Image (cartoon, rainbow, N blue to C red; front, top):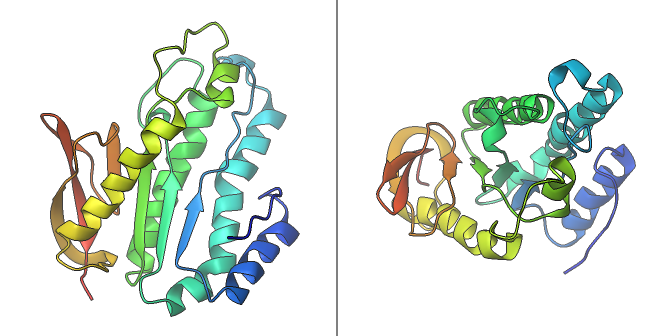
Amino acid sequence: MEALPGDVTDAGHRAELVAAARKLGGVDLVVNNAGILGAEPLVPLGSQPLDGFRAALETNVVAPLALLQEALPLLREGPAGAVINVSSDAAVEAYRTWGAYGATKAAVDQLSAVLAVEEPGLRVWWVDPGGMRTDMLAAAEPDEDLSGTPTPEEIAPASCGCWTGARRAAGTPQPRCGGAVSVRVRVPEGCPRACRPSSGVPVSTGTTYGCWCRAAPR
């Protein structure tokens, strides 16, 4: 494993990431998880610093698209290229003070949906992992008690269950989401809040969630 710390808004860093992956044999998966709030703590839209909003758009929307563009040729070459864009329920819910950040995540959702249509050979997911006990959430709402909020270490295995469950339900070890066939996926128990592969919305099914995944098995 090779780690390359850097700033995703830096074009040079993005190029270095893809070049390093190329040396290791190619790109199988791009995960866009980096993000900023645009204001700390969060503020109502009437008080939102515009420079902060511009910075959030650059980090949360422009940089993921730019990294995808950089990696897309290698993703297309691979046997099962995949993209995971980390979203937020702030993209679809009207939470007070979360308007600017939520707007950036709504943009990520739309980019993901269009990418799934434009690149039918790729698997594309956009996932809301739910609230997590992170420095970012503490900075967003410093007066909130986060002691009962799950940690990323608790959420990550369940999120992986969402993605692997979607792969199995497509009927092949290497499904390609973004095709023309809709498959209803029953996600393993513990899947956090919303698992939104390719197109559709989560459907509650008791202790688990159902996800609509447009999948075209190879």
